Image (cartoon, rainbow, N blue to C red; front, side, top):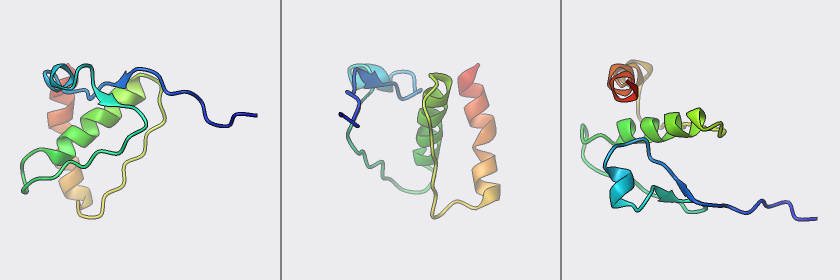
Length: 84
């Protein structure tokens, strides 16, 4: 019995242009580190990626060790703008 399902295709990032640079998105089955100074868009990219996955019917989980609930809420208008 094979408990691991095959991984096909790429996972779209939800960020216009980034999928083009990455030839379709992130390679599935890999771990990626997004790092940068405060305010460079790390959280926004992560949340856009999760929203893209959720819209595609994938299970998503976001864990943060640094953002407060208020800071996390500040990203919402940016994400809603991207979805439209």
